[in-house]
Image 1 (cartoon, one colour):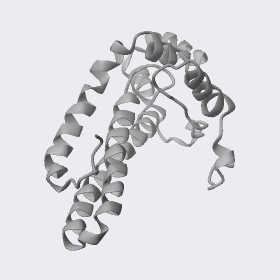
Image 2 (cartoon, helix red, strand yellow; image 1 turned 90 degrees about the vertical axis):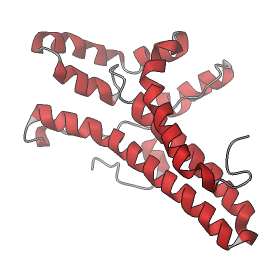
Image 3 (tube, rainbow, N blue to C red; image 1 turned 45 degrees about the vertical axis):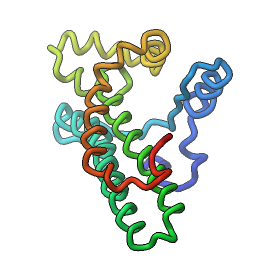
Image 4 (spheres, one colour; image 1 turned 30 degrees about the vertical axis):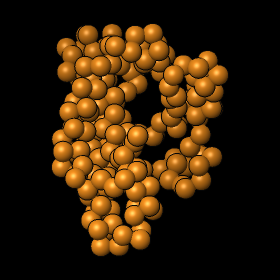
Length: 190
């Protein structure tokens, strides 16, 4: 596991993405904060079929985010039902619902943001395998830039991201149409 299978948060801190980038965004009043942990180490030599393995690993994180969205959506409804049975716990359950609401939203945004075909996001790993081999090799050169392309687009031209996040808005609307009836006072952002 290359030393990363631990609950010790210090093992997951990346000096640039966990500390520097959020600090720069905070002090520059960018209007948003962004940060990340160290990337999960993957050994492609363990894949039976490189192309298929790379695509599956890349889509696993996105599938996890979608699964967490479903879990948060279900738990949101359950907390609303529990509040009907135990009205004394309504304030606490409303706070839990608010956290679950943001869990729904955040996991959808992360899932579809990671589909953007800009290195080093997961969508770029899928995209490079969809390109003809010679174009794929040229495309892989972008990986040397790290997070710079995605940070530049996020900061300088955020409108470019809108089409990629459209499905997240649609799924959030669908999820909300299913569980909004269980919302408690204070269980949604004001």
